[in-house]
Length: 375
Image (cartoon, rainbow, N blue to C red; front, top):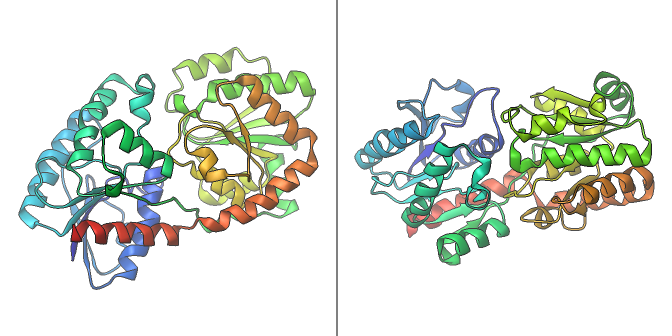
């Protein structure tokens, strides 16, 4: 087969959630299926580390698709023209975008529909683009892959797509995420939290990640517990000018909040493995990879009882109401005060993490590609 793949989010040292999904699945699929030809489409000069095997041909198409107008030009004209010329067996798009002008079979990976439920979390141009095009992408798609049963049900309900057309392809976790030694924990705490215990959030500072409520919950936790624990925030401040910044500035205990910015995988492993608990409390999530990353480092997890998070965590996390600062704070108090609970969550996390791997993800995505090609 000839398979064309949208790889515009394979950006060196800038991989986010969908970029990691693309990286981890494509490097396995291309290596495992040398008899097939893969054409990777980039919108800028790619790094050679993304040419995973000899059966990969990179093509650069302009313009750089980093704005709704440029999304339209890239997918509808640049990508669409190429697909109609090449006539591949399948076009795979890990970020969910398709070309409505293309006449080949197309498989988008739609990770979630957060913009349908919380449109005001996005800028106006992006919101308008998503709301207009994604229903059309869903109808145009030959098949759809998504990362949880929750997201599958959401696509079925929101866009009226048959469930038979949708394949669930769970995310995996980087194998580098492992428990760290007590000495690494000590050094990491000295580096980031003045040697104190800390709760941890990992992810971009996006409104739907619920950072504002986490800040308020941390204040409640500090006032109730009188603990010297810190709150460490790992991620880029994409939306720092929003309510998140105002909430932070109004915090009573903002001096105990530590921002690391983006960190590399090795450093993140150390930060995760040294945390008292991961406090991952978005109010909408298609999967939630940090939940797995924490479980793989033997770190207890506090997460939301909504959308996909209970599906991913099951009984291996302390589930809280992400819309309640008190519920989040109560979860932090329980983790802080109950060592037996922490131990139990770690043990359950060791079992739950065995259900997920990037090898399983790649195999499931390949099966979805085969179904698409034969449809």
